[in-house]
Image (tube, rainbow, N blue to C red; front, side, top):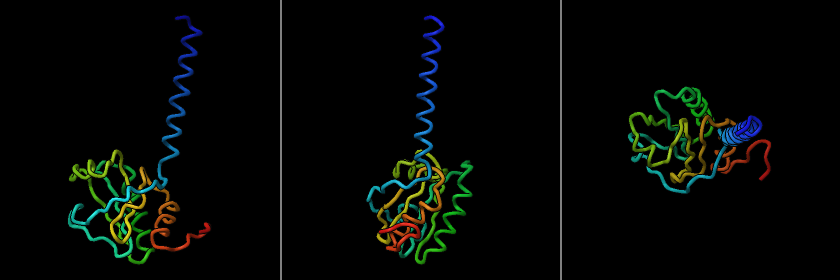
Length: 147
């Protein structure tokens, strides 16, 4: 292979890797449709769900973004009546990583009052996206959006 062909192959590989990275990054912190499955609090351990909604955060001991995410989600839950934030350490509960298909931490699930997964966030969630999804679950109109 001559140097020009090698340079072209290298450029294509760099472009493909960059595009893949940008696509992955664009999906981080955004809400994705929930699975619609029902989660019972007993599946997660000794936790109590909120009366109106529950924010379930999957974390690990070595996750750098998890403590800040926990503070954010706890604050959001505190601002929404009947909403509770629950943090699950997957270091101790690897079975839940398989059960909920968690491939990175933090991963966050938003559950409605019946424990139905209504939204999912991979990576550190954006506060406005969590609030918008929570408002949808709670039947509130989110500031800045029209329903």
